[in-house]
Image (cartoon, rainbow, N blue to C red; front, side, top):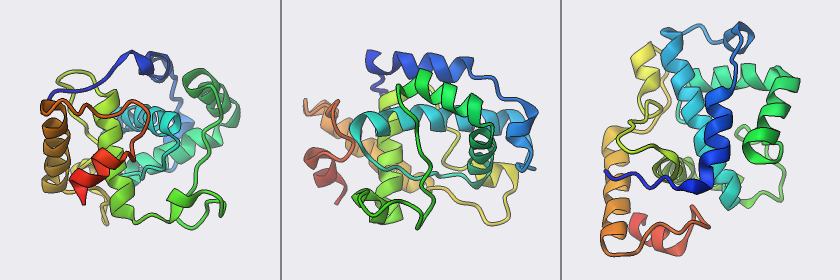
Length: 185
C-alpha cells in the first residue's frame, strides 16, 4: 500500500527517532526481543502525532508496547520533554475508563479506536515501512495478546487505497472524517 506520510509529521518523526529509551522504560516489559518492542513503541509514538494533530483518540494495539509506554511515562521529565519536542504539548494517557468525561471519543468502541490507529499509521509511515504493532504481542509471546487481526488491517488499508485512487485523499485534518467513516461502516 502506498504510504501517505507528508511533511506535517517531520517534527514528531525526528523527536521519536532521537528519543533515548533507557532500561527503566522496559522495567515492567518482560517480553523479548526488546528491539522489536522498541520499534513498536516508536511507531506508536508516531501514530500519536496524527491523532493529536487531528484531536482523535486512538487505541494501543499491543500490550507489550503499552507496558514500555507506561515505563516511558514514568520517566516523567524525559516524557514531558519528548512530548514538547514531538507534539508541542503534553500527550496524556487515557486508559480504558480513565478519560475525562469531556473526551467523547474515549467512549467509542475499541474497534473504532483501533481503526483510527491503522489510519494514523497510514499517515505517518515511511514508504514501504511495515507496522509491527498489529501482531507484536503474538510475536513476543504475550499470553493474552491484544492487537488487530491482519484481515481487518488489510480491509482498512484497502479502503484507504481506494479513497486515494478515487482522488479522495485522506483529509489532513481529521482521522475521523466523514469520507473515511463512510468507507469503514
